[in-house]
Length: 330
View 1 (cartoon, rainbow, N blue to C red):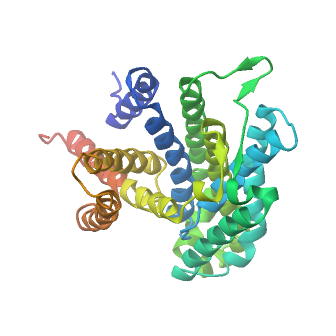
View 2 (cartoon, rainbow, N blue to C red):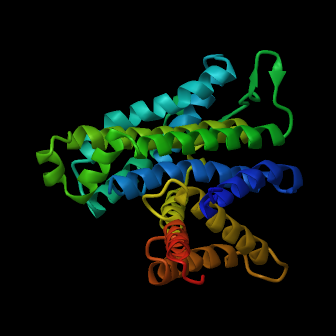
């Protein structure tokens, strides 16, 4: 008997093939790079918000930590690019471990505003202290390379980011289906019940917060090499809000939700930027359209796909598979 390949496997293979071909056919690699980096951040944010039930409006703080690690490590300390790229996620994760215990004692919107305050503190420190870039930021970051091999052009960075995204997705899948992941899902439903069952709730919260921060730090490190410039203006609060919208639209608590949300929202914003840049339109058209689209997108997603795109598609595929098993017409 020949075993049928599930539709989800086809979609996964199609997504992988599209990711490999897209950098070769797209003209705007900057847009593609930013979309992939957003997918890395949002995958961690979906892990934090969807599986662990913890809110964050300031994930840009950990993106900044990763970018600063690259900027300071290469320009001030003279460290090899590969070394700082590998170190950046751990620095961001260590930062999350330090700020996590006090922040995660907050709940709901208090936690969300607490993480937003953390981002504002990081931005203020970066602009106030010359050691962190000051008013002019940090420029002159060398290109990424290993030994004598140096990246030239944008294409190698895009493929490096895609490889990191693939690694993040595999790691997230392993975390979600591990014993630790089951404990995280348990306290997201009820902290009291999870604690009674032996789950170390606060320690697990801080751990998942640190993992999410590591993902963001990795994206920040890649962006610092790609730009190559880091300043407090590189991490606006609206970008952190965008990450949340991507996570909600894609589907919280799913491995692929962050990728789907990043692709959909990034593409929509790119279309809006193109429309708002047409001659004859006032300069305020772009921001107005962006904020209006954020509101409309959230309302539509909550009304018609409250669980997000990926869970909605998963449900449709499951119903289709059930009908086939029952011998009913699709």
